[in-house]
Structure formats: structure tokens, C-alpha cells
Length: 220
Image (cartoon, rainbow, N blue to C red; front, side, top):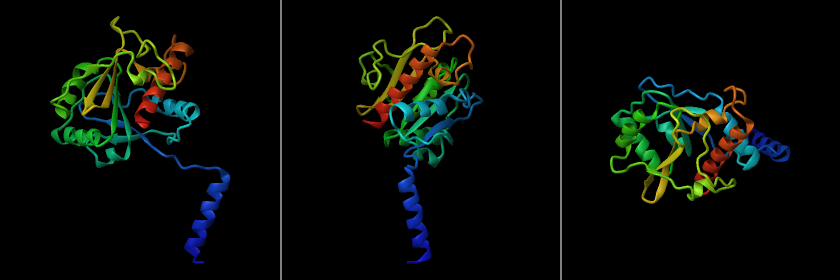
């Protein structure tokens, strides 16, 4: 047996009998231009990934990866997350790239970290001029996956005394973008104790909602 083939066989045997499984998917965080804090909720995705791996038996890579909205690497991620408080700007090339990604099977979760709404809506109009965000009703399947959320999107943080709303962009019958507004899901996924006064109960609701979203995306 050639040396290269021998080493390949040994490595395969070690992986097989050690029970090690390489991660199946990677989750991406979208880096965008405009000056907004795309890097907010620093511990959120890692915690959501761990929650999903533990409770949904997914096999996501433990750490998030950063991907620019206009990059060809966007297509390496079946699910990407975008958050922030401030300005977002998509160039024409970035908008076209994001559209190609979403219409080709990718999925985007936008989480308003308070203040994002007035910036993200016109940018998503560049991506889908023909579509408008529609509010998802509480009987939408995304709220009834492993965890039943009879009231829909949970409220994590109060800002302007508004109810939490889940919006979607639906392209040819498929939900391609989930937009959580006035909820602060990402804050709920962060390490417990990051925000004084947050309860474990609220954090668990946020993680369950995130897990539902993941399960919905990866099983449809």
C-alpha cells in the first residue's frame, strides 16, 4: 500500500472508532459596510450553536465564521446572521450577491439589536425590489418546531414599549429571510449575566426560538 493511502486509512480508522464526526455545517455572521456594529452580540451565535448541537443533535461547527456580504464565500454557509444597532450599506454588487445567495437556497436571519430597522429595510429593498417584509403569524411553522411558541416571537428586551414582531421575505413560496424586530433575540442568546436583570427563563425562550428557526431552515 502506498504511504499516502496508508495514512489515509489510519486516519479514517481513528476517526471512525473515536466517534469523532466532522462538523456538517458552518454558521456565518455577516460583516457589512456603513459603520454599524455588525459584530454585536459577540457570544450569541456560539451559544445558539451549542444549544442546537445539544438539543437538536445538529452537528454545527462550534464557532461562527465572519463573512462579507459581497464575498463568494457567502455561499459556503446555509445560514447567516446579521445584527447591529446602526447604519448598513449594501453596494450594488453586494445586493446582487446576497440575492443570488438567497434565491439559490441560502437563508438570512436579521436581528434588530435596536435601531437597525430604518437602515436595513431600504438595503433589503436593493436585494429584493419586488418584495416587502410580511409579518409572520403565530401559527407559522417556524414557531412550532421542536419547541412550541404559541405566542410567536419572544420578547427579550424592552426599548420603545413595542411588541415583538417576526417579519419574512418570501421568494417563490420560500421564506428566505427572517427578521426579528423589537425582540432582541441575539441579546437573549448571549452568555447569562451579560445583561443584568435578564432571567434564565427569558434566555431559554430566546434559545428555543433560535433553535426552532434553525430546525425550520435545515429541514425544509
